[in-house]
Image (tube, rainbow, N blue to C red; front, side):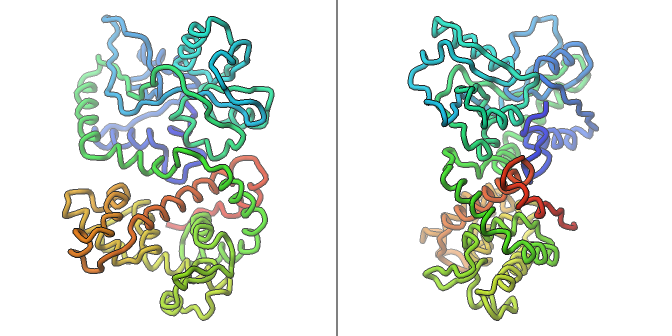
Length: 431
């Protein structure tokens, strides 16, 4: 199905959360996978029933109990997600469930949501009208309904909605209903070795932290409560301030092989695109450089926009290169780099060492996110080389940049006022 978790259009982190788990399975089993998307869960499950597919990835799809004669096996539940009722802010929110009577509710074509709607209708002893799309995707119809105040309520599945929420500024969660929808795989049990391999694989990734690492990378930065005022300010600054620095960002990003949108996100976190910004600690400029860092990067004026952007990009690449000695790869390495930009490379080294000492994976952001705040405690920082640091601030800093970066990437792709200002930054850096 063409949903963000499986075939992402917005996410910069990779091929998708559920798709990465499939890739892990492919590597684990030494099997080459042929992936076929279907427009609905039901059609995909029918393909499995009729032997046209061997394994089904069906996010939030929970078919009825199988007949004993059907050779299909259900894998373990790896996520649970409720159904949400959204309302358009240009209409009243849901004050009591009985307000749904005589209302028209939109939902993607999802059999789990259909069942929840039917159960809800039975509870209300009335019949709201359900309008469904032609497929199970959430993004396209919700973008349309975001601007259509004629539909007051929308029924969605939370796991699919969460990555879309920053781009749906007129839709708010007003309630949740029904039993949680379960995320699991289904596979043919009549294929030799498939059940044993699948069960062993799921046992491994749920015990070694793999699935939690993937979940953290794709969704860990998205806040539980969306601050729409903050998103309004970000959009406004993208339109009114970012264009002044576009050529400097693109030039520095190309020179130091950094994604221009990531560089812009760092700049926004540091200064809100204010070239005269300064903090009480003495850092200044768009990229909030210290005097020592500016000198190390060959920058004579921290308040000059071009020099500040160039110096910040150069310093990010410098830190990224230094982390090569710690065997950190991929996006984890960039998130470690951002933490080092904020709190210092030495403190990141200390956190890596503590992670290793405590038996956690020293090369994942999920571990560092847990360990970094411990450097405020004497029990831990007294045993390190570089001592005390406000590690919790470093975590908040990285998470904010991840959120801004993700949001900018989506705004650059989706239709809207910000797209024309962000599209020039959609440059793929050289490997």
